[in-house]
Image 1: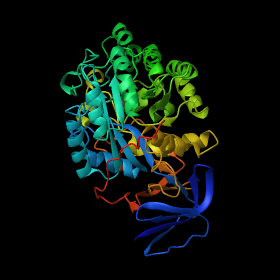
Image 2: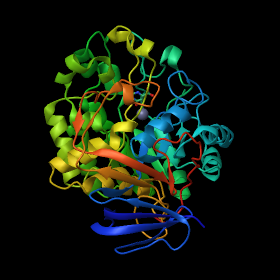
Image 3: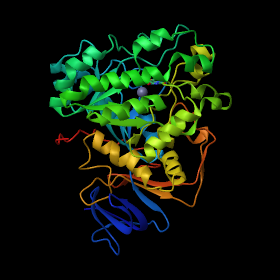
Image 4: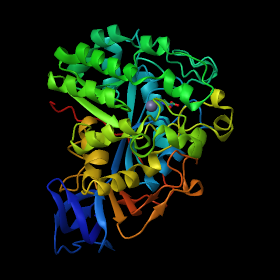
Length: 456
Ligand code: DOR
Ligand code: ZN
């Protein structure tokens, strides 16, 4: 048996912060209390003055692997995650081939296992031709849930294609629509997995389609009504099926209001938003440049403030990144030709600590990036908390050190992100995955996580 003892830190527990030591044996937390000592051979870490937090779980990343390893692969994705205190990533199914069957999911899992430095889970794809049997197959192969794209957002072309992103087409045709959601929601509910939706209404996007020559064209082309209508419609079709609906990358005040209405009328629904929507507004485009070309777009100060307020009120459950790297070459094209998407996983935890601090309660951050995501992913019995019996996925944060976001320190293949230059009043000191340090080590010992299908 090998032990790890983390002494003297302020530990985030489900009941709040606690001055305590954390004892880990063979990768699992065994005790959380003051005055502990090693009981077997092992290592002792002094965490005096530091925060001891549960590893982050980013429920929305795009590894690009397989398909576009020049943009990112599981090695670079998970190195960036590890450096930022994220110990589980849930990868979206728009890799190539798209993850639409048990077989594709299994081969993607094998590829990811060979490179992953942190744990990972895989979303399966719902397209309009998907069957309940295919969903059951993907669930048996370990899918954490299913993602339905009502519209796509990685347009590369001047035309701003809604469904078919041209040369970047990640094989997603034909897309899901509300009929697909209504048809498959009962099957997803029976499997006990979440149904994640890219919520933009295609008819509204079609009505606002235009050449995308500038950031304001981009904003005008993706109005918040598209988000709100898609949230309401998805919630309406999901409502009486018992399925758990998860709204990806919520970006607008109107979308939030629609989601709140749906929750009030009884829909089981969780909401994620992303740091770009919490730290930036459209005005930042002139400073940030194409790293801010992301979809849905970063909108107005009123949208940002509504989302921050949604987190404060606990209506928005979690923060994910929509980490979506493209190559330098792609991101230096003229505005209309550059693909949408930017990296973010490495700055997730620090940015959330900063936001939580500005709200007067830094302990909100582990709730948004660890505890709530663990519940969504069905991992709440093994991850998302520092408590006896949980995996020792632990991040040690120094609240007395600062971090400035610098491209040269980013581990993702795309180093430029929308938060470049931001300063946070915290620094990540050590990151442990099941008791093993992963901050600097290059070993691929990440495992695939599978949801425990508990009644929810
Ligand atoms: O900007 C985006 N890029 N938004 C998404 O939802 C997907 C992503 C991508 O895959 O590039
Ligand atoms: Zn995405």
